[in-house]
Image (cartoon, rainbow, N blue to C red; front, side, top):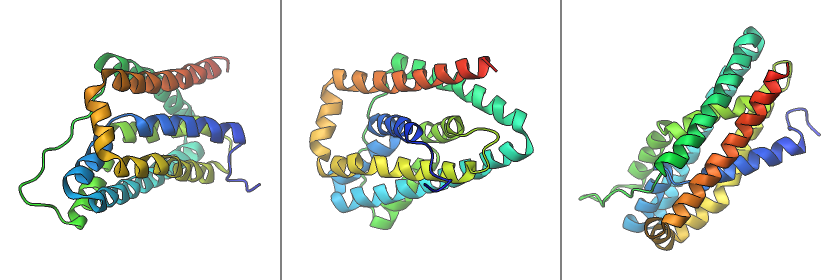
Amino acid sequence: MPAFVPDLPVILAFAVAAFILTITPGPDMALQLSRAINHGRSHGFATLAGAITGLVAHTSLAALGISILIVAAPAAFMVLKVAGAVYLLWLAWQAIRSGGGLRLAAPARRPPTLRESYATAVGINLLNPKVVLFFVTFLPQFVTAGDPDAPGKLFFLGGEFILVSLPFTVAMIYGAEWLTRAFTRSRWVERALNWSFAGVFAAFAATILLAEGKR
């Protein structure tokens, strides 16, 4: 197996977290559903392409920045991991307390072009705090300070995130109207997703803090 491929337990654990983040309502999902409902599936897929572009940028920036910390400042890297774990606990608490929610944008007076839908999705993904914090605080938890293959593993995990999110996102665009009704009419669905998000992040954070505390 290539050195840049993480161990199977790491791949599976990351896949669970990526899937939970994907199905939790947020700005990216709201935009994709809005464009698919108001302007057709082609705009839904244009926004999906824009979100993927943003994820590639997030992966590249996180992988390069974390790799520099591993080599130049191992102590700072460990601080980042612990701070990230604490922040994951805070995110879990926020998900339970605020409940998230899905707010679809109203139809624009002038229908957007496919290029505009794509560009809007890129901007929203790059500025989406949930995605930014996921990559900054979560990716470091899956590599160690002494791992020479950490950059490759980080890029691998970023690619895994995109692959895990694609099936649900494509299905969501095709079933946009039904899914919107499910999110907006059922508080149970919304709460279940947010509790899942909180549970996964809290579990990872606790594991990280306990592991670091034993060192």
